Image (cartoon, rainbow, N blue to C red; front, side, top):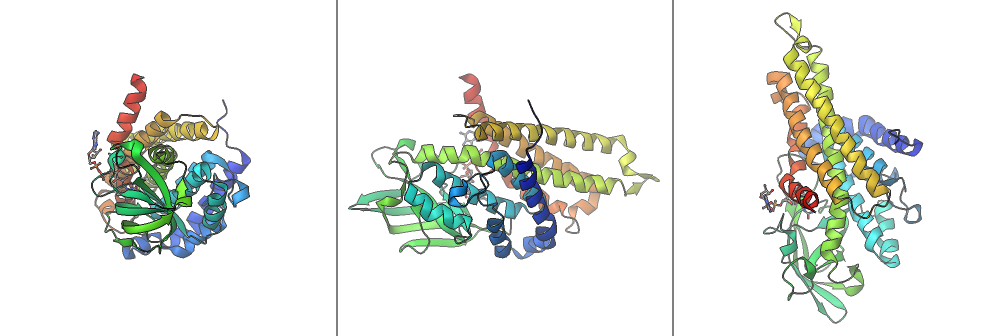
Length: 381
Ligand SMILES: Cc1cc2nc3c(=O)[nH]c(=O)nc-3n(C[C@H](O)[C@H](O)[C@H](O)COP(=O)(O)OP(=O)(O)OC[C@H]3O[C@@H](n4cnc5c(N)ncnc54)[C@H](O)[C@@H]3O)c2cc1C
């Protein structure tokens, strides 16, 4: 067993960390207030190879693997969780096209994600009525000659306002009610009948894009089917297993940033004539936070390593990493605010942004309860 990162992993981590500290840090707080999507920084991520960390060179990716991808997501999230989620979902879209797509689909779409032509990619699974129960979703794609005709609505689609390509999950077989009737179809913005809704007013991740989508007789050539008909749920779950490593890494980044800010504060703030860092109650909060974040890091690295080594199944490990890291990060952000007292409750410190941003990590890409279901099912096998 070797806990040391490779030179390439160290390099990706350094590149992401440098960009976050030198560039993202300048505007992250302001963009949270104005809800501006930092398109110039997002395009820069593509130039740096961070939109395809685990994508082969052949299609313009960095081919640096899953551990490197996780490290990059964590470094970005330490400064801007909004930019991190934009990067994570774009990587996820590219990876899933790489994994299930035809050679034409890869050449057509992955290269455009990698060179920034598309700005972002998007993943359209959730619907207004079906979130956790995605296998029951009701958007339909009916074959009419050589075209699928798509009808329905999607909710909460990250990157939707800026995506050059959407992976849309729809029911291609209406006779099969459950997950087996679903397929994944690549849809471009601007296709007739495809409407991108207005940005959601979210609690956090305010400078990321989250929109609804509607499909009104949208005709897409059948060559845009990803994988085979009926593969949709398998494709979605494969994407989410990897995506959960990303969300766990994002949570870790936010937790580490919160702990770092709190640590700096308690070393300065005095009460009762002493630095508050000298109080054991404060040290215990720091100790619990640091220990739990380290445990989260280990779970994340294990899941990332498994995926990178080509393991057929890593659903349990990805679910454990996401469940533990995101619940931990929420606890850590809460304790960090506690350590700042009233100041932690103001916009004068980044902590309140981290606290709002981290909240969604236990919700998207499968809630904590859904992770528990996945883990429980695996334990019982
Ligand atoms: C900012 C943001 C970005 C998002 N980005 C995307 C995206 O890019 N693409 C996409 O497809 N989706 C996206 N989502 C959707 C997200 O994945 C869903 O919100 C999530 O899966 C939960 O679904 P829901 O909101 O419908 O909640 P519900 O499924 O209605 O769940 C509500 C509550 O019930 C609990 N629950 C549900 N079923 C069970 C069960 N079987 N056992 C125990 N408890 C259960 C849940 O844990 C939760 O506490 C995003 C959401 C947000 C908020």
